[in-house]
Length: 128
Image (tube, rainbow, N blue to C red; front, side, top):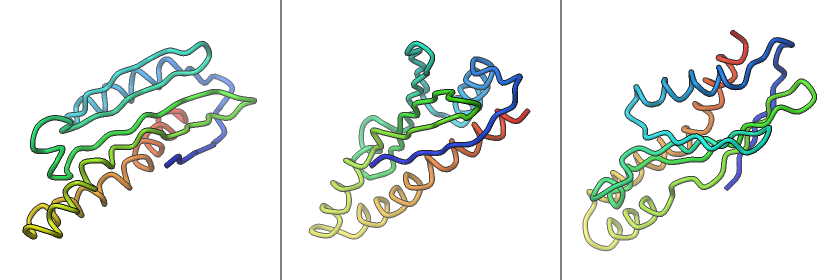
């Protein structure tokens, strides 16, 4: 699943400052954030609860954001979203008991809103 956001940025846009601020913001929220510069683009990997039972209960969150600056616009492509644990939790919950099913639904809602939340935060930081 790939989501894309495109928005204009000002003439004094500094991608490094935006990346630094978004990394600090999401680390404060408990995410493990990895930044990989790729020429003029940057890939940021956001992960939270990606270990142990949290992952298979469907509550792990994860997405990669690829940021590029093209013709006065910031382009953000979201890839590699964390859906595996949610699918396992839904299947186990459907067959065995309701608790993993419910936690997986909660995880699905959180995961589906994560790219939009990150994109909105990056857009707000880009305008500052």
